[in-house]
Image (cartoon, rainbow, N blue to C red):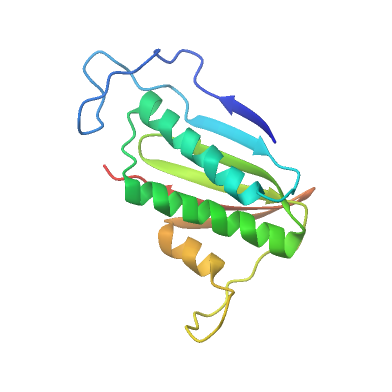
Length: 163
């Protein structure tokens, strides 16, 4: 797995955050959202590794953006990452990148794979075994994004953070 992180060029080193997640007076938030891109080779354990990448990203988001990411929101984001990555592994032969972008208000999770076939949203059916991944992602997200790319597609979700 290869990873690359982009942060604001002039962020403060170690923002001081109040107990409610707000920044203390005199400490500015970074000018650009935190961005992280991790590449995977499709080997066993890639989905678990993607969750680990997400955990580290959320810790940095809290430290650098004073973002409030409670345990429940962390769990929701892990589930979104797991569902998107698993769908790519199952239906596209593996995902090759996890992209995370965030600030104090939301996190965008995007999984890139090499299949040009867009996923379909199935009608909710509690009797159906399987096929609920995008349904779960849609329930946990403000927005689901699907984009065909020259090398395949990207499927992403915007998850709001509590204020």
